[in-house]
Amino acid sequence: MLFLHSNGVGTSRAVRIYKTYGAGAVQLISENPYRLARDIRGIGFRTADQIAAKLGIGKTALIRVRAGISYALAEAMDEGHCGLPVEELVPLTQKLLEVPAELVETALGLELKDGAVIADDLDGRRCVFLAGLYRAEREIAEKLKVLAAGKPSWQVIDADKAIPCIGRAIAAADNGDFEAGKARYRKLAAASLTPLTRLSGAMVDAAYQAVWFDDHRAINGRRDFKKAVKAMITFAVRDKRDR
Image (cartoon, rainbow, N blue to C red; front, top):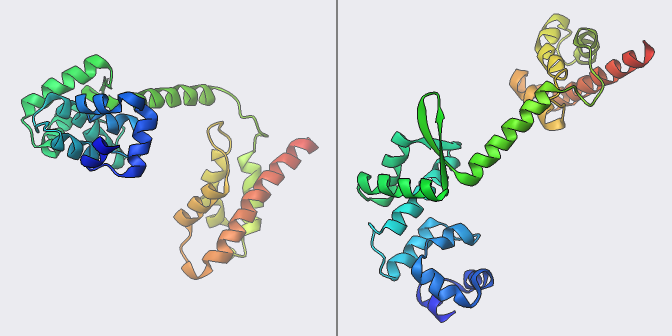
């Protein structure tokens, strides 16, 4: 505890560190304080970097730059990117860590070799991903392919038959413009025909927000829209049963 406190680590974080590393915590952190960002929830690269500086690890130390690769990718992930092209990752890491590009390239090669990050070619560009995120993306893609090739596990909705039902349900809220109602909700009805799409309250709200144009009717309009979607599903199931 004294070692961690003397290097700026608070009590709660110190407890988590000792629970993770046990009696070897001091040695492990002394050898590579950047492992804290990887192993301890609540400790990021910046905190590990501060500890490293107090331990005398310089800015250009290879262990710092290697950890900085994952840090740069995590920063890009916060912007919505699953990975970055090499030509973007290198300058970003260089900027965040304030180190030469050549050192970043060397560190990147070592991280790729150890499997901490993974490279893949996308549209002719070499891109780098955090290993865990890359594997998760691949697994999601494979599952989506299986779903897309399969059949829905729910009753199939006949969009053409359901649209008039939707139109009647929303006619009052839509100023009686039945043709406009059909056009607006045709896509929603058609989407329910695929095994990749389910109608949830959140989806309905999002679709409503995208197509509605009169704010003062928002509350009643959303309620009517949800009723319309429910009516669409009910109509389709009843139609299937009556055939």
